[in-house]
Length: 243
Image 1 (cartoon, rainbow, N blue to C red):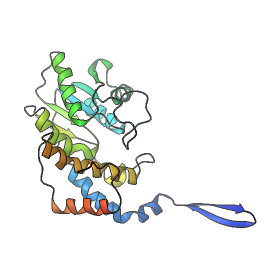
Image 2 (cartoon, rainbow, N blue to C red):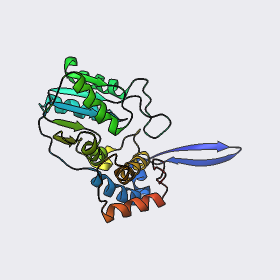
Image 3 (cartoon, rainbow, N blue to C red):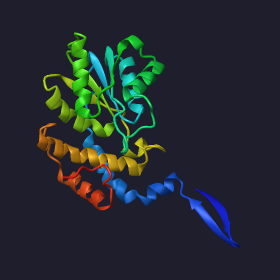
Image 4 (cartoon, one colour):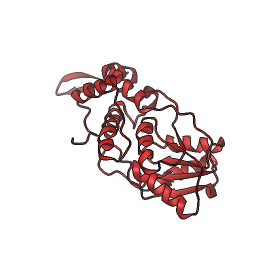
């Protein structure tokens, strides 16, 4: 924790900036609910070695690191990086002037993935398009994989899996993410408040998209629905859709 002294017209004020531990204490009640949602979002598949790894574009380059690690560990023969400049003016907006796919490919090449083993899909702006356009890209090159691994941030597993059931139901697949707790996921850019807003939106999209036929319907356990309602009441609504 750091402090400064500020003087204003003969008056002295003490200004204190909370450190990370203090910040965690301030929002611990919200974090307890958020951890319930974080755990629900994850399916905890054990990835199976596949013909293709599809790295699902997002604002977190750790997904590209993880997908590269999968490739270098023999879980895929080809890496597809998918994602456009997908979000403008929302919580998933990035500071990049290049597509998510291109940013991912840069990370993969730095990690040692051969450039000739990387395909770029630079048009997708949502999860369904990530899958649909990657499928089309492979098909256009005459590639028919026997199975795939989908690499994504941890709290996108369940929704991606449900989307696969609609977009590519016949394809054997596993989903995989870096294994970490919610608290370990936070960074100075991906702050607790920001991530909780985004996770809330992803959870809500599970039942909205399921009802619209855009993904497979899923049952939401009572404890997860209760955690959602608590966080919604606390104001974590910035990534929610109008229902």
